[in-house]
Length: 182
Image (tube, rainbow, N blue to C red; front, side, top):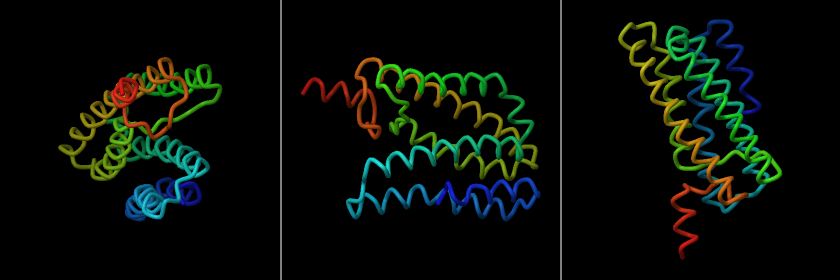
């Protein structure tokens, strides 16, 4: 559903239909959580589902960067260099997985899942960035989220180099190290 309805969010944001955007974003973003919950509850997890979820995550969170830009351009401008580093590390994680695992892989480590949640709430916060205090908070929050992403992508790259292809839902490098010891 995120892939199908994402274009609607672009229409809302471009046409400056801010409230429609906010409601749509909240609903669409929450489908990721409920989709996973339902798949786990009814034991419907599949490799295809994981792949589709990864693609939906990529499009949704890259789109969220655009939405942040539209909602809080000053906060994005203040973090421009950090955003460039983010996209470099993001791309590097795909290159490393393609080299070591023979295909690009997007991991769902605990840290990267946490950041997905943080970005979701960050876009919602940015909706209110017309308020100067919220604008400052948004700018700082973007920087914090980017630093957490750096750590998550570096962890992902280390996992690919050290362990090769692993389950994309592996919680962390520490869990891999623990399993290796057992």
